[in-house]
Length: 275
Ligand code: URA
Image (cartoon, rainbow, N blue to C red; front, side, top):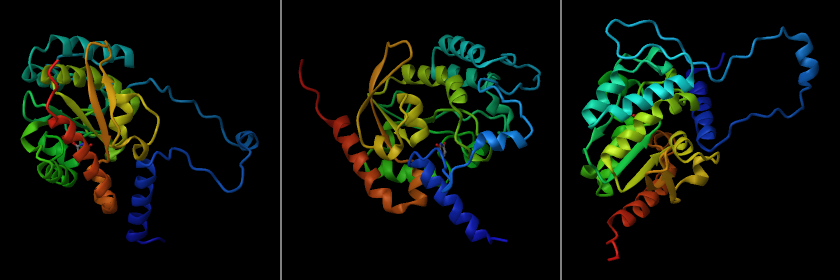
């Protein structure tokens, strides 16, 4: 029976591979899946677009969404009707179209913290246990490291911090693309209302979702991309960087994150050329 430290090492290694973009595990010997399939009982394939059906809640604003496109449409309508960040946070809190809300998160939505109207929005992956408890993003160990990094880069009071999803994924798993898609109208509205100059995308799940990229974070980090809202009305410079939770596991990678932050801040503070 492996001891706890073996599990911790395995978990850290798997997390490292996931951050680096490894999404398939291959055996040394090929496996004939056609032959293997003959002896396995057939399993019904789950629909990738299925959304958990939430139990009815008294006084809720929105009923359960039957599928992703309906949930996205609901989120779009609610987001568009929110004319300030307070109204947007209330709309998110009342939204029941994202299955994450019913998969172990406390019912608290975790929206954002920081400066309203900030020139920088930091977008992480999704709330963890501590964030779920406090109802604020990046307040656990990773958040404390993020705060230190932002302070060192002179960004502390110039950021609004949020996530791609507003409820904690169970077991801190990576949010699924359909969960991010359902939350995206709220995130886009938050970006529109905040009107930042730039986006800092913390970790692969954030970078891939916002930039629609398949590459791993180790290849995306430190590069400039153009983020575009789904209606094409907003375009902003966006830089992916390493997630602070990854840096806690791989402290040797901190210098790369630091170099990203310096590049990011240099552009933010670069005087604009007169037209
Ligand atoms: N990790 C994230 O991506 N977001 C948080 O809010 C906390 C940890």
